[in-house]
Image (cartoon, rainbow over all chains, first blue to last red; front, side, top):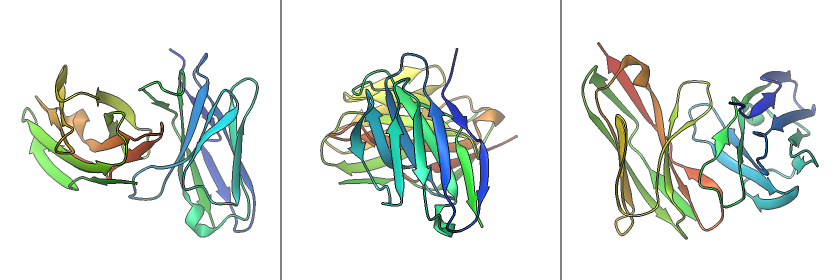
Length: 113
Length: 109
C-alpha cells in the first residue's frame, strides 16, 4: 500500500540558509500534519492542514511557513535556519481532520551547520 | 495544555512481558495512541484507546483509564525486533497529537 512520501530524506544546510521540505500524503488523504523531533526528544506538533486550509498551529517558529496544495501535498518552508532547527521533520496524513489514525512518513533529517 | 509523562528506559529478555506506563493531563481528550519508533525512523501506529478498558491487538495490548489520566501498553512474548522507543500520544480538543518523551525498551537474548 502507498505510504506517506517525504523529500528529501536528508538535507544539510548552513545557518541563515533556507530549506523546503515536501510531503506527499497517502492517496485520498486530505489532512497533513507536520512534526519536529529534536535529538532524544519527542515529536512536537508544528502545523496541520485540512482541505488546503490551515487547521491547527502549534509551536512553529515565525521563520517557518507551510501550505497545502491542490493535490494535497504540503511544503514546509524554513528560513534563516538556526543550529537548533537540526531535527527530524515528520509529516503525517489522515483521511479527514477527525480521523483517529495518522500515518507518518519516513521523515526528513535536517542538519544545520 | 497537555502534559504527558513516561518513564525512560527498560531492559527485558526475549519472551518476557513488559508494561509501559503513561500518565497525562490534558484539556480535552479525543483518544490516546501508542506508537513504536525505531531510531531515526517514523513512528508507527500500534494502538488507540478512546474509551476506558483494554484493547488487545496480537502481542500488544493497551489500557486506558480516563478518570486517572493513565494508560499502559503491554508487550507480550517479546522479540528482539521489539527493541524500540514506545511513545504515547494524546489527541486533545484539537486534532494534534501531543507526544510523551517515549520509553526505550531494550530486548536482550
